Length: 249
Length: 283
Image (tube, rainbow over all chains, first blue to last red; front, side, top):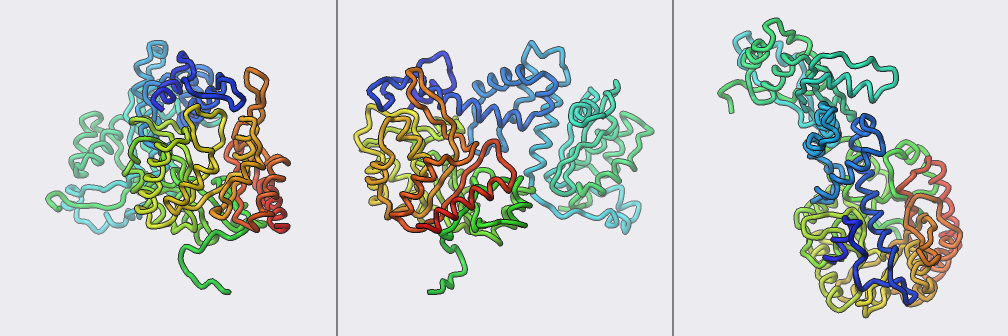
């Protein structure tokens, strides 16, 4: 089985010894059926997971890069919904793709969308829960996030690039940095664009900062940062599942 | 006699389909003759999301067969206990009527190949496959069914025929069998043997489920026929005929139509299930 396994991912190796075609001949190219099945099924997993990366570099290039990724990083467990994590770093290290600086961030966004799709279902906290708090309590409030929520920081117009390559008629990307928040209000994950300051605000909250602390983090990037809009977005998208106060365990 | 068991009833001796999310609406609103579904275990091991919710809803309307494709029972190395624990968790909440896996391997070292790979049939492989089946049955607390593979080649080292190998596994472990009729036809065609002689030698009394599915036709470099187990096309007439031959001997059994690639619309798959219903009605 070691020889069988080794030859599956390496097309330069000939078929292992000791196999026959049932008719008295060597198995020959029949071994390639298994080779093809392995590469085809794993390439299909990569195509399904990274449709925008595939569109950006073209189907033929994608199959070449995905094939190299599969040979370098074959799955280590049988759940294909999880396979492909790490493709962002792999893409970022391919010299021929260096001119597409945003490719790794697009891959990270697609990984986040897929992870969000299969994350645990949770009950959202209603925005009204904040209304009963005193201003002093509010500043010390920490928010708990649904496991389907992800935040991708980027120096590229990441949301615009994703949308332009996902939706017919979407506007062309503008030269601005966009962080992207992934939420899942029901069963369908959705990406949302954020300014870098808004992204820093949510990143701080997700790291466990209080609303006060998160506001400081946002203000360091943009003193006039609009917090109300992403706050409303979090609650509208069922992204918040609970709250706690500093010092509370 | 009326069966009053509330949990884990057997699969109905009726047509089932391999469930695809695209068929959720069609299957629930107009199932036709379909009485049960089969799902690939590894697609339902997420923490949550739509697919889990769909399976939860379907399991209240249909009997469910959980069909593993990733346990690597035929491998020489120890089973992945993390994966076995995931299978147990899945079976605990789905409470399927049946759990089945394959006479194949897919993991070597740490690498999972995402395909059902063949093994030689020897005294050595018999011993470790039997031990793996026993481990699965002990962990899940239930009998499992073992499915025969589709073969594109054979091993010089094999000293057992496949039907004898399966019969001996049944004897040693008490497992049941899932007879994939399409795989019998594919293997016989590819290896130049007789599908009917295979069925003659096969331990039919241990069969608790049948599979039929579509295959693709190719040829090897010598021009010999090479059928590929694609699950991407209608079941061929030759496989329907072989199914009829099997059912004539076994009587009606739970019979699954598999269509995993180039998935058709629901009415097309429902029509395939109706053809299985016709075959079951004659048996």
